[in-house]
Amino acid sequence: MSSHQNTTLGIWLMVSVSFIFALQDGISRHLAGEYNVFMIIMIRYWFFAAFVISFATRKAGGFRKAARSQVTRWQVFRGVLLSLEILVAVTAFVVLGLVEAHAVFAVYPLLVAALSGPVLGEKVGWRRWVAIGIGFVGILIILEPGVGVFQIEALIPLLAAFMFALYGLLTRFVARTDSSAVSFFWTGVSGAVVTSAVGVWYWEPMIGSDWAWMGLLCLTSASSHFLLIRAYEVAEASAIQPFAYLQLVFASILGIAVFNEILRPNVAVGAVIVVCAGLFTLWRARVAAHR
Image 1 (spheres, helix red, strand yellow):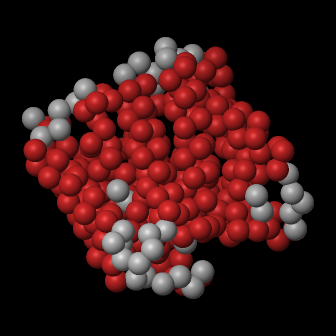
Image 2 (cartoon, rainbow, N blue to C red; image 1 turned 135 degrees about the vertical axis):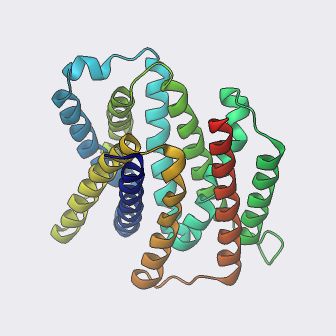
């Protein structure tokens, strides 16, 4: 398969992942609106952990090789961090809706660029710092801090974006010593342990139709991660990462069509600014990597 074909396949896989992530967020919004969010995340992680363990046993070396990490503490920390980020993000979907929560969350690539210096010691040029600043202007337009009474709930997706950016940086950090299979294993297992420790105390009976939605949520969670791994296997991350922004488009369509949400003009303008700034930082990162 040629390099062009690999990139094309990677792009289509990333588009598929973005759509499944948006669908997953919509299901999470529905379930978390009816049941305790701790329980929803816990059940989701049970299935995810079972998936990663099954995935590990099918690989060469099996379970032991997948669990053998050179930086176990950091692997556990990033796994726990991701589970907490999902909890915060789902809460944002319920409180703010999919449209506004995703518009704010779109800032996470800018946070990755801003934090890559102090966390990983990478050099961030002045052009990317300007783009980061412009992106945060977009966030201010979305949040409208000077108009009326500022809602503290608007900071929830911003916290989720910060947590996800830190998770992404830690993933790059552990990748220096561990394989992607090891990171995948610890993401599922450590997340399942911490969510079970909390979620089991918030168990609620669930009606049959919502169990069907819960099953679909588990399937989308596992399939999206599998497709994401496959996308990064067949194409360069810098080439396909911009297409992850389609999740904002898909989630907004879902929020408007299914949950009767409204796309306010300031949210649309701010989201466009944030996405453009994020795409620029991704492009500059790619240029720096080729150099």
